Image 1 (cartoon, protein in one colour):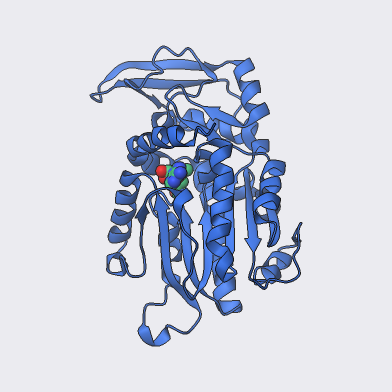
Image 2 (cartoon, protein in one colour; image 1 turned 90 degrees about the vertical axis):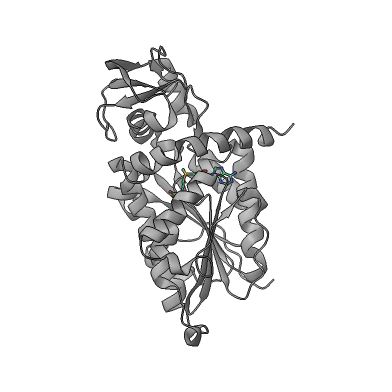
Length: 347
Ligand SMILES: C[S@@+](CC[C@H](N)C(=O)[O-])C[C@H]1O[C@@H](n2cnc3c(N)ncnc32)[C@H](O)[C@@H]1O
């Protein structure tokens, strides 16, 4: 039986609650996360430039699980807004969807604060709703669908992840577009995930592998005193405990890793917090299997972050399906090959 409706509602209220701290402490916070974001922004920017400038496409971009609008801000300079240039190459529109109303409020505010408010909603738009309900794109441009920053890992477990693959395919298929999913690899959990989630437990709650759980409840926020970086072997982290009114009720509480729970997280890629936050870091093989299962009519590329940019992209993997044939020259110029190739792209 599907657990999706239940986990969807649970996650939606959780993301509404944590949207502001997520924006401050993760999107613009932890250095290893911002390095990863830099990696995927460079990747998407380069793909968009290649498709428009080198291959002459007019793109319609759409971000699944768009959060606070990072990709909108990234791609906005490529928008073609002058009516006389409407037939040239560039980006015609950037849309996105998120189920958290608060995230979309932040996204709109970010666009206005960056001086881009006049482009709303004709050229930049945000939908509030389920990523799983996005209908196929039937406009006149080439769709470029993206899902970044491990949004797939927080989209309600493997059932949601499979659905996302299927919906993104349905979105781009009628107009022979391109879809990109950027996410973390299960293989990077030991190096990156442990220190990352420990450092940001004021956003997502206390990770289940840390003991004791005395203050692991929605009544309290545990504020780490420092960011732990990737590969930091320290099994402990020191936090201050803050109550619901924002008052610090206990300083310098030490939480320590439970070795057995840590082993389970590394083995499964399942990140759970006591407060109902769940994330998945999917193994490379699993992502490739889903690509074949849901995207198998297109040309498939799988890119390990470490092979493109070890400094910024080591914990990441990028899945690309291309129905346009236009990604190929860029992928090959980076030294990659498709692992599944469909010769004809005709509908
Ligand atoms: C890890 S955040 C990433 C946000 C954004 N992509 C970024 O790069 O900053 C994941 C986002 O997915 C959204 N989300 C999770 N499940 C969703 C679903 N089923 N439909 C729409 N949005 C969802 C959350 O609200 C959250 O904003």
